[in-house]
Length: 478
Ligand code: 4AD
Ligand code: MG
Image 1 (spheres, rainbow, N blue to C red):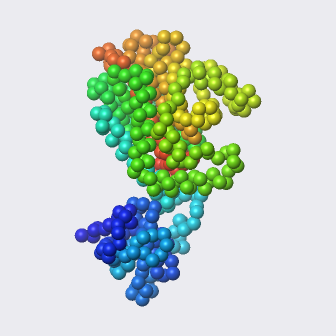
Image 2: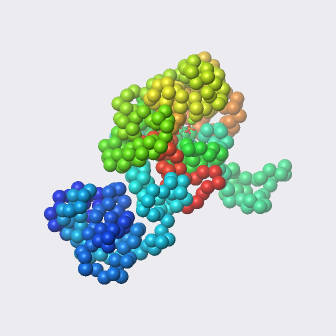
Image 3: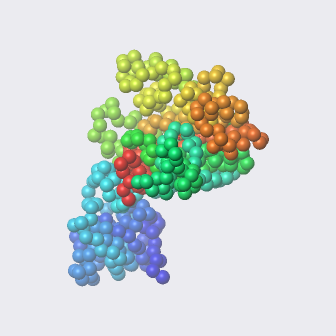
């Protein structure tokens, strides 16, 4: 068998007692023709492999270059050097793959995140991205664990769909029609009847509508999958392809919905804190070093781990949209005209407003409820005031909106009336409306942007650095 290896993360926890082991990994550095720092991706900590002097010929030693892959066998011994308690005496060394150190783009020095984005195929081999993606994995695992423990059914909603769940028209079309000469109707418009699905179709912006179908049968479901938005937002918080978790619960109102969202977010953060301590400490240090470059008033009040502990141990603030607007109107920032965008009841709050609320005013995550109906989607439950809907957004320090959700309009007549007002084609959503025709129930749900919570937990400033291969306007490399 080729692969009978010990992972470095595990090996580093052993007591060195001359155990015979085989390890495999990539060379990070090779010092003095004697000390190899070997990394296998299981941890940022490298294993020191000591090459016995005189045992290997120069030809082999020359091939131990940064990023070459090795299979090393030898004994685990206490380390004489500082910084590690054990090392492996390299008794046999096999080069699995050479690497031309001159051409290898990742040099053993600090590279900028922007540069690393251009070599995203290799950036996993850095400590920063090693930590980020191990944490991303843990969060994904914790999400399934959380809902599984609660008895939710994991539902795979379609990626290709004919509907626009958010009604915002930010869809990527899916078609097999020839772009240069598509079949046309008499009026000149493209004839989608000739298209693959016999109608116009697109990549999903949200699995919610199909999720509601599941919830009104299973009671509680969640989705966790990729979603796509053709919004031309070139920010540190937007991706054209991102992952979203969307739980949907029957027999559930806005308050139940908020409670679940808060419990959920705390649970997955706690899971990462318990299972990814080393990686979080590494990222916390990285962030602290980065912030040293900033002027005092731009630095965070809390370190990364402190911030996460704070979020897990304190309840989220809950306010209505109307209260949020009042706070903004009373704020020194507003009075000193520090906001770029205007504040008045009815606005779709801009990121500067959301950040003021969470970072300056409350200094903790905030759940904002009961937004004006005109800035929210057609499916949200209408409140008795005739002006607002039972919506809730969760805003997080440093990120802004991480969750968007609502209680759903379960009353058929109200839903149909709202759809008509908003020009949502009811005939195309006949299946959605059927849930309101046959045993409708109060129900609610929300969507958590996966990359945004990964950003929050890892402290990474740009969303492009928490997804393996980011898709953003004018960028689809790898
Ligand atoms: O607020 P949104 O648009 O809500 C929905 O899609 C609902 N159908 C969810 C539901 O109720 N089931 O998106 C939900 C979350 C946002 O709060 C944000 O965290 C994330 O998805 N999100 C994005 N993340 C990265 N890039 C983008 N372009 C995003 N757009 C939304
Ligand atoms: Mg939203």
